[in-house]
Image 1 (cartoon, rainbow, N blue to C red):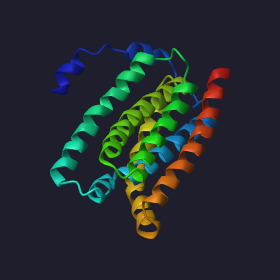
Image 2 (image 1 turned 90 degrees about the vertical axis):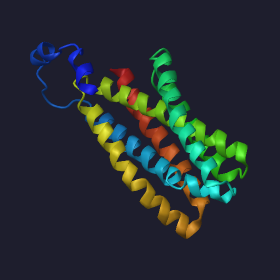
Image 3 (image 1 turned 90 degrees about the horizontal axis):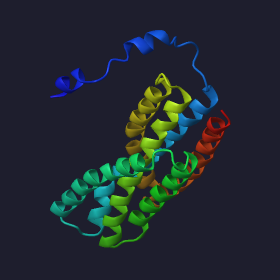
Image 4 (image 1 turned 135 degrees about the vertical axis):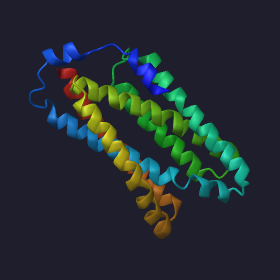
Length: 206
């Protein structure tokens, strides 16, 4: 199914051959971007890996939790659509910082408001804002290195975070409950906002 689509892709080999990779540029903002991506993914997965348990806390049947999970995955596509519609009309900093805040608000809603409407709304909003954030994180990576090296590293950092998050979340929940996960996400949001502020400032100066 994928190969026929790839045949229709434009051939960028000539442009790539005319551009020598050279040394990797923007190393400090690039490392800050990788850290922000890893922290965002790990703190998110510390919550998401136990989203089912939060539903059980509300005494939801397994079938209803499965329906909510399906909706969460589907609604995530809206995040990419919104990011694509915005493009770079308002720059990169505002969408990134705004996305971080909305993403945090969604997680806190699910954890602290023990009601079905808040559980559903928060889970859907978290999915939308996560994909929205990832889209702009990859955009920043592409700006830092048009050859795609920072973009590839950003994808790798997010993949690693998907494994670290559930492990960290399990330890926190076992020792201090779900409130510890919410505090983790608060701290992570603050750290990521600072890292991305620095990253986008360097990009804007360039």
